[in-house]
Length: 304
Image (cartoon, rainbow, N blue to C red; front, top):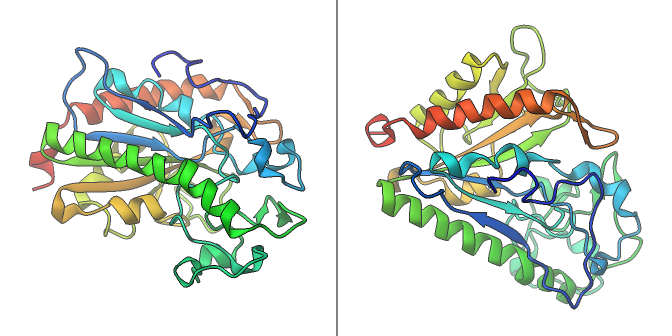
């Protein structure tokens, strides 16, 4: 992950055949000589591989707007600072690893779902469950009903391995540093609907801590202060308070702190073409400063 192209920087979506190893994610551990830190970074939505088994009505270019494009590259330098990192490689429309694995919409399936896979959540209602029903401006991904066996295969092939790996990274960080701080990195359309303005303008970055439930207040406060000092307008929990990852892993009482960071795409990306702009380098440099700062903090003392 230290190399900029290690995670296949490309403006084009990739495809694999059903017979190939899906390689659902990439894991990177701290580089030799890096400091010991409790930090774990995750990028669940930056994947840009669209397997042929997706069999979607929409072509890959039409559904790429759901990607958190190049967020994996923005966090790529983190292992130099002692951070463990994971990035999904498969597109979130194939299976969204920032959802409960069986957060499924029964209306999408030709057969009855088991009772334990009939999630009635706002995300499912919005068409954005573990397997998305819509993208962009409400366009439906499929012109057919899926089978539950198809959904379960995607979950077993991608979702479960991703979270097994992420759980291992969190456990490693906690064993090494006495606690774990998991940061789930995302990008957001600009401006995000409902975002609280900062200094009279839309937020550049939104930090989500599930309204104080997923991490100690000091963790979110320190990230917010550091990003503000770098010149960014930072909002907290509106409109993004955190997803499945922060909810599932965040257990501050047990020494595992989780927060979500959403970055406005306009800072670094031409959204229509998914092409990095000149702002990419400036943002990447600022994030490296952030990584260096948070890697050097005494998190055990700060979270007591």
